[in-house]
Length: 428
Image 1 (cartoon, rainbow, N blue to C red):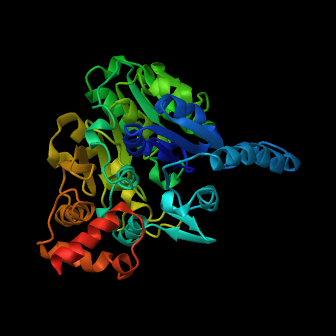
Image 2: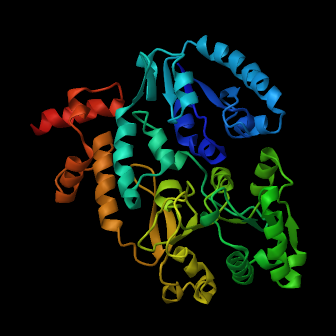
């Protein structure tokens, strides 16, 4: 069997496609269309996949004179499209809603495409993706994106088979200075306090190396963090901001004891390599959507009532979701494990699995949406044929809210649609 995945999003998204790619690898030949800047990383993570790099992000184009950009774009993409168009694929998984994704999907018979389909000049969204668009208005009870992509397949591999359980490798603490979205990242002052606290309370970290990671844009913030650390701690540190490519980043991260990070591609890379993650989630970052995949990871999740928000919209409350990370009680909580010390507005979450995939359960703090989230996951499990039942009133309310008439009046080729039709027949 020959199958193609079109994943033209960025670094973290490529890593989060792992469950789907491993599922397809168990069935036969796997092809992966991706941005050319990520090809080196993909070779490390997915040595079984046949890669089809294209220019999708324009990162490489920005470094060229304008007159050369079109030649670069056409010179890479046109030959790649010819090769893709000649593939005799049994199935194509198109994972992103973007113009280029649809154009690549247009190279194939629409009957073979799952996810986002180009059919007779129209951009069509499959039933599973349409359902996700409806639940996106209820982000506090969302599904991990790695599982969302994996469930485009009728029977994805078990979540426990995706990433190895996390265990320290002896290389000390790694700190990711910032992510692409500024409000998701801790400013140097809050980050310094958290780093100092971890070095003081985690056995072995105080004598191990400290590695600062990020792009060249974070080099200044890294120097500020080093200035604010005690001299002994700063002397143990190596500032690698702007000094690693993706394969080099994988080598460094793969040897760490612990990675402290916001919601970043580096976080997902650590999880894929089986390195323990302590992640800070605030602003638009929500661990149930994009938390580190695998067992042995922790997330400090801010839970102010305005979260998760849109990073593109201005914050009208002074980024109050940041305040718990500057609370001195957080360091005391890390030192003692006493849940009473955990600052208000913060949850300490542990990664776990259920029949759908990855979820998180409170290690400390009260998750006010836990009951509703369980009902939502029951609804999705029943929809996908992965367990669950329809008897609970809240689940029936979700059925009425999330299903639309077109889902059974005009069924598409998504595998879940057949299950939905069986439900309609059984119930009526």
